[in-house]
Image 1 (cartoon, chains in turn blue, green):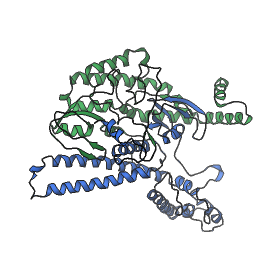
Image 2: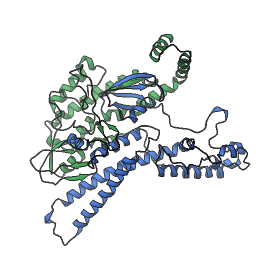
Image 3: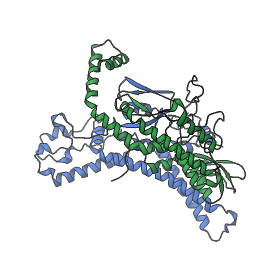
Image 4: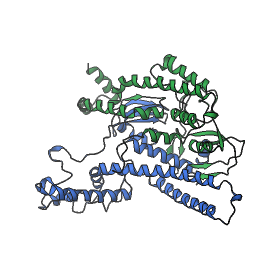
Amino acid sequence: MDIDDILASVDHGPGASPESTALDHQLLTRFWVAERAVSEVLPWPAPLMERMMDRVRNQIETIEDLAASSGDATVPHTHNPNLNLRLSILQTDLARTQYLIRSLLRARLAKVTKYSMHYLVRLASRDKNPSQTQSTLSSQNPNQQPEDSVPDIASLTDLAPLSEPEASFLHAHQTLLAGHYGGSFMGAFPRQLRRLDDNAGGTSMVQGPDLREVVFVRCLGAEVPVLLEEDDDDVGVTMRMGDVWVVRWEGVKKAWARGEVELL
Amino acid sequence: MAFPLPRGVTVSEIAFLAEMETVTVVPRQRLEGLELLGGPVEPLAPPRRASLPLWLALLLKRQRRANIIPPAWLHPEPLSLILDVESQHQDYQNAFSPPPPLPGQPSVLDRNATASAKPQYTPDGDRYYPAPPFLPHNTAQTTSSRDTPSLPFHWVEVGNLLLESASDDLVEPDQIRRLLKDLREVRMSKMRSGVDVLDEAATGGGGVALTGVGSMELGEERGFITGVVDGLRKIGASKEQARREQMAEQRAAGGYNGTQEEEEEDYMEF
């Protein structure tokens, strides 16, 4: 049985087979490489991560059961000479998967903290009926504090691209940070200068990830055009299947979402 | 600091990825099948060959529980053939030799055939096209024997790992080592001489092709290439802005479609 057979066994359409372990592992690996390759936070693949976490939990139980049976001195070891080998293989495999997940989560956390205000503002701008937005209140507020410019995202349901824990971490982190800035130096500023999302003079001080950075991609579809801009119809060069290109991330972002290119 | 590493997978992470490649082994002992998180592993029963992920094959090899059958490309003859193509062939003076084709991709021999990517479907219903390290590019038999030998994406890593841990399973390991080193040098100089065209990737919609590049070669040059291109992009940012505004104006005036505008602009710059 080679990898093709394993893949063929799961190729029965959406969610048909529980034997999708190998495929999910490939998806996780590809997503990890992609997350490491770009400077923005990619959309959280919630169903995939739930399946992976379930599998990791089950695998830890399996390993614990095996280890318990090997530690049992009353049972002679002769019935299974390979037990230690099996245990070490299972543990290595588990450690490799855990490394992938840990690295993925930490890379995302690093991006979320680096561009915290950018993501908070982006999430908050989706709020349909903002409850007493700070913008109306804060201009008159004589006790303007940096914390006031941290949008409240507690009522939001659509947190894309973040997961729920990431969003609540982001809010708590930024609130603490704003409080610290206020306490250490911003409190001494005139109150109109105390906001963290100031865009006076047409220049926003909220920094976001740079979507024009170049990435390395492999074209997986038959032909994929590179777009001039993310939401543009103008196309530049066309990549062909199997090609590896250095291109701007914004030009291939949509093709990546369709799974037609792979980040390297 | 949640994560200290720079953007893009680093060299050690690439080595980690390369260990997911599938290789062929001849087991020297029995082992029942295992359900791993990376997918099921078939039962081992000597002397039947089995396909295992490289990390597992190396683990068994180091404990003398299996022998690794070298990948089809990791022999002196195919390697010297590839080296000839890399260094002598006219078409590949400034390009890497073609990589092994993806499933559904026509080989370099029949250029007229069209690519037909056959996607699989993920449990979430998205399309999925498999790619290295999850293709059998490093097994003893490659998918079709009539293909010309080619270097797989993770050739540096797989080659070095096997030379290091399983050199007794290789045919003439010293010559393989020498050939791999020569290939590295030829391709590295190509990578460096390609710096001139990097300006292409600095404009919107443009790009530079690196088809055939190895994962480790990419990892080593990543910092340099992204640094150069991002620098060029910042230098050309105002020019690009002006060009975009001009295009928007033309579109507002109507009359041209996108491609015509582009061509016209190229002439107007002179």
